Image 1 (cartoon, rainbow, N blue to C red):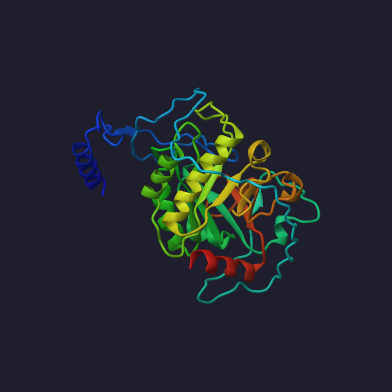
Image 2: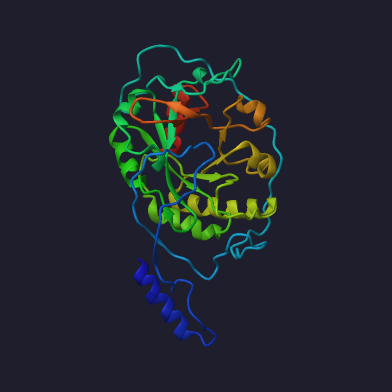
Length: 335
């Protein structure tokens, strides 16, 4: 597909009198080290993890860290981000009956523990029937069947970030999670010093479009360890996010989910994207206290989880609903 794009680009340039210079696509490919970007909840292990090569494509629109402006030609005409008030719904506490079986699979009750347990008050993660995890290369080699038995009914897997990095464990985790019967989806860590359209294209290039996969996730947060030190304005952030989200929705036919953390949300996302589902990180208090007025689909309640099948710590999450609500959502969004 890529060689055909080169050929067509050349024909267009030859046929237009004003076409001069070199195409953005005609850039040299180089070998890049695996990404060092992480979510704020991930603690890098001391042991070595598998490393894989990823191709890097950099075009004339690349913006280096520290710049105060960025080339983002695919702008939106008139984005509207209105403040909305959403009622907080308390899910029922799941019963301790045998796990569900049938064509949809089964829901495993959580057997997770936590290296740093937190008292969440009246509504705790245990009140939620459907638990899951999110993983990246930092979890190393995962025993997925064992992880599922301990309560991983879904898994979001780090796929890409920026325009040239792919998690070296993505393909292995993607295939192994599916083989273990776990509902899986992929997430992209957004890099503010690159164009949104290019990042969306990179994700699409590396994450397969398959029936049954969960909707893709856009991970937006401030990362103090990132090589990109530039912080766009709120308007620029919302615009770039909209470009990325729209591109993924057109390709996968699923509305993407937005993952974020408290500081980034407070700076940029209050009242924004009322029609997109949110996945909220809140490891010290219930999301209703940290993100007042914001409904949520997933709650990341721990970055220090412990589970069979994984050496070290793992992020823990819950779905906002009971078991029947989970299956309705899966059927509606994943087929």
